Image (tube, rainbow, N blue to C red; front, side):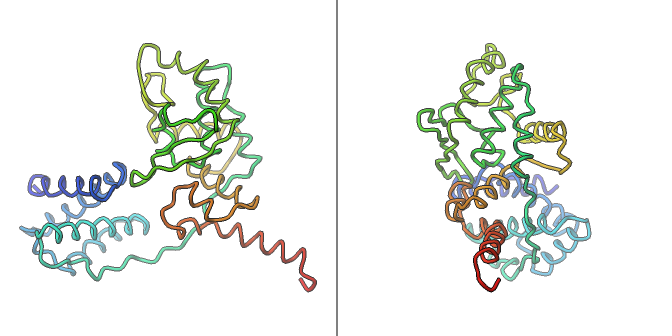
Length: 300
């Protein structure tokens, strides 16, 4: 079975991604899933060695992914994973030629992310029941998420030592183990303090955890757990959009841009390594520029 034949090769690759390339465990897990798809394909074609893979095999592999109904973004991610894998094999002298050298990713349509209005954000923030231990915790989590624009993994993995209470900012470990400072303001700090004083000891009971936000079991939140939580609050707030924690992140960026923040500032706050990633929000700037032009130009 491929799982035995390539287990050591895959484990070495994943270690390389985390230790040398600095990728997060979540990202390396995505790579693992994609490479296992490749191994399954190799097994189905009865190829006895990965060194025998040619460019036509890779094209056939991607065609099968497309036929299986995988969306373009998932196929693109798989292409990135496979290309990185073969680069690693070249680096380790396991293969002599790279079958993915001329591989081109399918073009993707850049979709403008869903954004909530400030009114909808306020509705969600006001839903948690502050008379309950979970409500105090959830209120603090939602407030911090909107104040900071954190990724959901960054939020649930926040630790108590990551907070500067005096100056109102977080120290966040983002993608690629890159550290950044994110201001959250004193409203969020107060919410955190209320949670720490009135809620967290009751949730933790006799359990010790470094994580800031914990469940009834005294453990760290999972991404999926918080995703379910935020959907439930959105539904309770009467919001019909299918939202996720990333919707709050998009809303954070959009609301800042609407009020005059520049893209470079947004890039730093979101932890984007490349400004091109942040440019998905330029639709906001373009709208504002049109409004200014229409208001002030004599011939508009």
